[in-house]
Image (cartoon, rainbow, N blue to C red; front, side, top):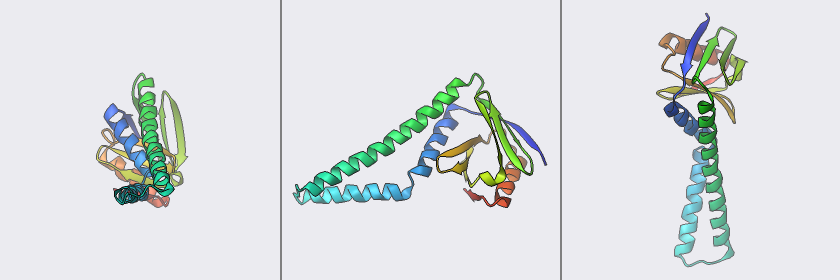
Length: 164
């Protein structure tokens, strides 16, 4: 089977995908660690503890939160900048039994199905996770149900994980 479809990117999709990809990096364990640090800091302050440990916890919490926040801003700004750079915010998605490709005026990628480690499914788009820091956003508006099933099947066959 061979599929070919036009992917249309909108600011809404790009913002949501940037947040979703940021959440891949800043997972629940990191958020839990920040919450634990915050609670520890609050308990220490309420106990009138003014030791160096309280200062260290505060600095660590501030730096960790800042890194997470700046990472999100970088993700959103970079994604929106690429979207705005496109005269026509579209890409051509093509696939067959051995590979998937996407091309736009900004560049192209052609990968075997085995390069997709995971698909994270969202209502309006999918994130095809290639590595911890690399992904492909696939808007679903123009991707038929049959083509969606084909992509999911090929990723499963190649050993990838599908997460709804």
